[in-house]
Length: 257
Image 1 (cartoon, one colour):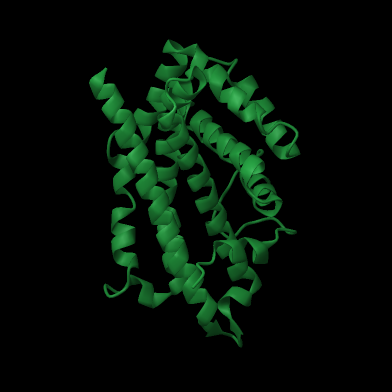
Image 2 (tube, rainbow, N blue to C red; image 1 turned 30 degrees about the vertical axis):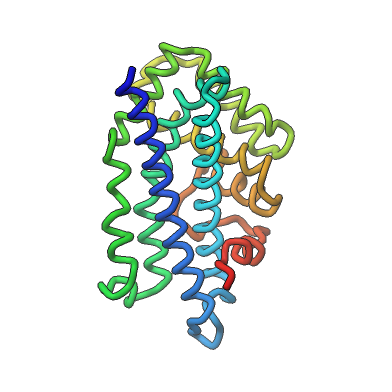
């Protein structure tokens, strides 16, 4: 039991570290694109770059929201709901956030351009370190199998998970549809281990979206749900749907002097 408690804290540490890495990479990209001009305009005023920067910012928003929610749950494990969230969602968050960070670091580096790969910039180290947390304290497959184990051994953790999602019910139609489809997925136990990554992916985006719907500005939550939920999922960064308020998302994420 002592080892299990230590593992939960170390996995949470991985979430914190990867979220911090995302924020560091995003801050560098946002700053560079606010002062670098090409084709007659500053980069962060150009539509496609805005799409990329806003998408990177949304990723960081989701990672931070989920990490801080697990932090609160760890502080209140005497509450059964919080304890069940720790048991199930720590593995979900560790898997998803750490798995997303390497591509986030790479895409942020690409915003800088060629100088981003030079060793006198912060990016080579950020990029080299980005895969570590995904491997440390249980790789992706281990996390997904631990989610299945928690579901089987402590069914109350699944109830706690969906109760947490229910707090955002009615806040976004795409999220409501995503949660309904996920609940249906949980009734199908055939080849569950084979499907584990897909299920955990959907769990991660569901709880991130639910937290943002509750706690983030509407332009952030709606853009996150529109780009990451549903049948299409999320592909390369910079593919946010039309109508996204990229300027507001970038402004919110840009470090202030």
